[in-house]
Length: 231
Image (cartoon, rainbow, N blue to C red):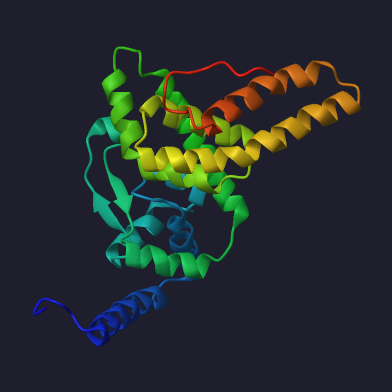
């Protein structure tokens, strides 16, 4: 095909783009580089509140510096979804993620933030400004999904599952939700067993609803009318 780009050209362009990103990165001081690397945890955009809560940026000047060096883009958004938002192009995000490496604490901080934000706006859906809450949830859709995929905390996973269930996810997202939640059913069941074994009768009841909810969302019937699960 005349429109087909040879692999060598694609590799050359990719290498050239990476070189440009690396050059911009080399101009960052240590604090800016750390913030830029941590921003790779976000998917689909974020606002300054999220930066403060998760990235722990020292100042707005650091974020503005990343914008000036084209490592972050400013995205104008309606006030209902936070007003000014920031976004990393995927090529920049991939490079930044390489610099970050594995940071489980950052991942859990991102998941906790996403869960809290999701549940807060979920509770507002039936209020007088429910459409604003829905717009915010959709704006954070990629962050919510990434958080569900990466969190290792059962309570966080279940909270995010509630948000996804309420939003009515696409079929592909439901499959991911089932896979992500399936492993928590066993973990939470073990928690109940441990509570019984050490003689804490009040704790199993506190956990049982979590096991039931996780089992329901991880089951093939998730997304269809709910069915009760016997415990």
